[in-house]
Length: 77
Image (tube, rainbow, N blue to C red; front, side, top):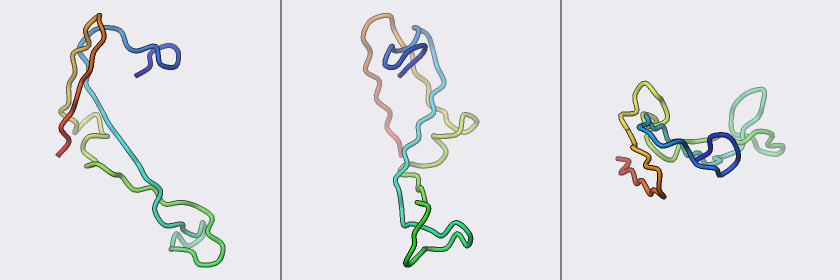
């Protein structure tokens, strides 16, 4: 987690949490958005976890960050 600089952590407090993770799927053609054969041009990204966790309006995840080192695990079902 980052606040001001890369890998500097966050200010202690309570936070609403969103999580997203994407993987590249089959390549698609830019014009047709269909899977491409000879000249793939754009990867299709697919979510590897349920979409509700990536949206601040639907994610019910919360975390309390303490002043010392923290490890917070989320069970994403």
